[in-house]
Image 1 (cartoon, rainbow, N blue to C red):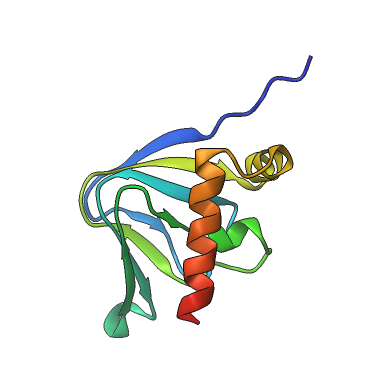
Image 2 (cartoon, one colour):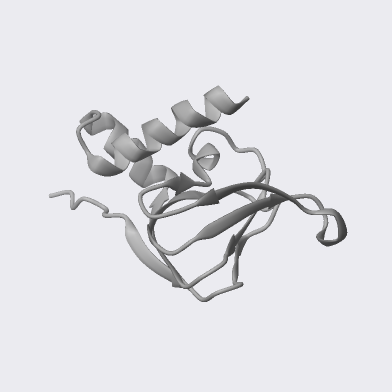
Length: 116
């Protein structure tokens, strides 16, 4: 009998780096509380790309390609997230679009596409 993998929960302290630009992307994050800032560039010339709040997703491009992270994510407050790995995402996608995590990921991807 196959057991279903559930997204794990993780917490970050204020000012903790969640991942850095150039890191290998292996998961996406759904913010359940707190505030995450996404930056691009070196420490001396960082550009703020976006701010994510409860219910928003970041790092989702890792689920679709094997490219390195395109931004650095930093917890600006205490942050709690659901973490969705590539395997978990593939399992959710196979079940269809009714899962709330899948809906959040799909919405985030659509918004990202509109920003480009």
